[in-house]
Image 1 (cartoon, rainbow, N blue to C red):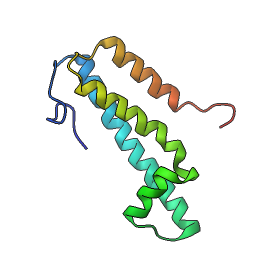
Image 2: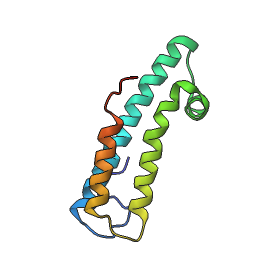
Image 3: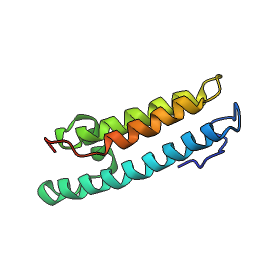
Length: 110
């Protein structure tokens, strides 16, 4: 995982908004990994051990892992924003943080 200020995303600016977005990205990646490991253990309890290649296929195709796609897609959008030539705005970062919070609030359906 890359840390804020890493060379993966050349600094278009060193703004606080950009740093917050990098921190959000890192937090989402860590959370995604934790949740993926949790789902993997649950899947393996029922179906037996899966290797890395099988896990990759499951993450893409299996319904049990589908709920993790939203996190992955969100990280990709953040990556695209960080890689763009335009500076990261405080408004974009605030919106991304608000969306992250909303993603992890329980709904009536679960």
